[in-house]
Image (cartoon, rainbow, N blue to C red; front, side, top):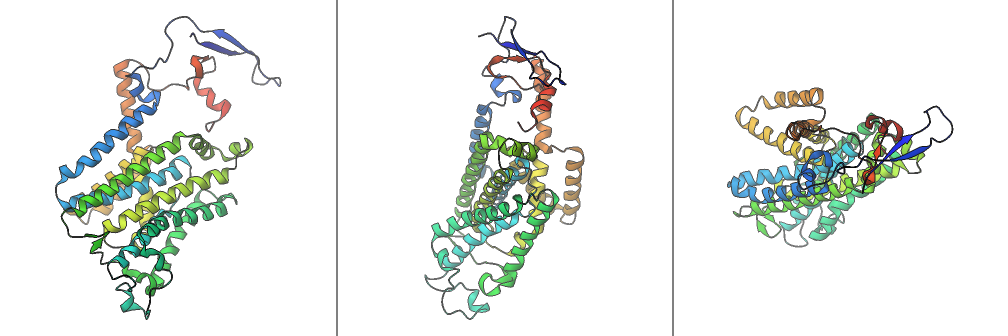
Length: 421
């Protein structure tokens, strides 16, 4: 089927709608014809490219423990995979939704504490008090707050649903009042600080600053068994794949396009009849649920759950993972979380006093000179390489549907319909 060319007949200042003449496109090969090779090129944005990368990533993920070998290294990577889950959720909120959430540690901590409370009860006979309550409290029976966590499935559900519920209430309260930008960032950071202070101030219920420790038994397994670390790694890998797959489906969906449109222009989305507050709240809730799931898996991996792991500073570091990897690219969020934490451990082992300086320098360089993060840098270099090999430009305008060609220059399309359209 041959394409068509649309030529506007009136100027931009005319009040009457412009007339459009449909001109048959020149005969010849259909432009943009999809081939097995072109579907893998970045300009086509084929879903099969993401699916292929996802499968290769999953294979590499489950093969990694065989390469590492040492149980301590496997446990370390399991921890980083949990961080990557948080980064993916944060990228949905910040990269795709434009919500600068500086308190993601709150949702990560809620999930971790929910599972940590279950693990604390697993260490003692059923109906007994956790060991720290014998030291810090005068309780004679299990407090009502702790009773639901005797069941693993209840604790797992609470770890995910409570952060989502809290994010939903906070999001509606904030976004309905059109609070955004730095005010939203400060507000979310304040919630993380308050969460840590509440934990520290309730010594009898949460063990205060010391946190929940002593997880020698993990879901019926001994913490010191040789295969426990590998099993925890596999759980974290499955969790990351679930989170990553869900995030990919979300950002490619109609809602994902609406979320990006809201990020680019809330007023235009509101003019089109949508509620930006509701759109942003849903994205914020999804990010909180992913952070809660990551926290639930991270609790047995860490072996300790304390307030210092989830306050303002770790929340800011989570944001830096996404910035370094590449905001608005899910693979970039995974890359940033793994790369920054791998570098932290590697540099700290060799030069423990220099990591903070190197970390600060890394963030300054990325924000100042690589605003797209390492994922953006890799993408641009790959597109340049493809253009060199195939002889075509890696950049282009939007491809009209049905093979039609527009006489409007590609750069002007965004000006006409808006970036978020």
